[in-house]
Length: 295
Image (cartoon, rainbow, N blue to C red; front, side, top):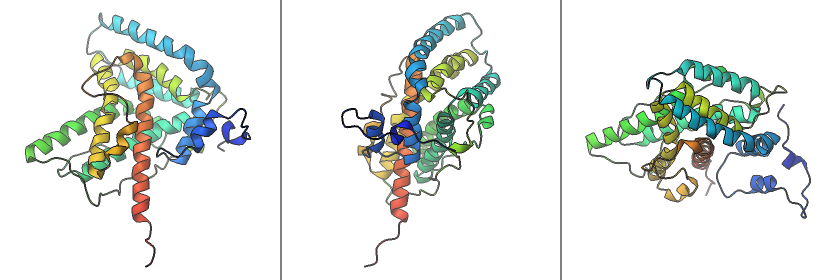
């Protein structure tokens, strides 16, 4: 059973206010309440407080060392299946249930957002939804396919728009039928004594492993896909005529690639931006579907 985070179980002390409680109670940004609880429980964990400060510099040093080593190895040498089996094993045995739940949710949410844009665009764009039901599903190259899906979607969308001389425009009554809560339960995530690693520490550790076992092209493409948050955000905001909601999309400009050393932190931003966009679409759908008051 899901435990109550410490910041919700402790009484408020005005002389020593809990910063995590303040963040949880704040409603200035759209995000699902269960997601916010899980995110802040993970962020306030001992793992993030005591392990992340040591993991982050170690992971960044490994990225530099692996990059040097790759100068002397074949450019196309990759072990994608080994990588994903290792990632799934690490998720199953060492990562906190909240972090695992957020990771699996991310594949669903990313697929739903792309489907939303495709369905409301003035052209036909194929998509390849990813809907993992369990951690073992990650073994099927899911992280790599997730990145490929994003780039392929942007290419296909804009090729189709150019071919038909069209562009994205605000949609008066957008199709939101694909926006829904993923059928994933936090209580179903592994909860062994060793499942203690927080999301950001796990991402920092995964990043150099990702680099080591994939080609340079795959790793560069994966890390720089994070800067497409603005692109996807602009697409969605254009369809909804709601560009003011782009204020929290901050993985920087897609035309200015950043160093791969900060990929772990930027991946966390990417996950949070996706959650907020999905929450906004869920709120829009709920408002539209709510029965109007009788006049």
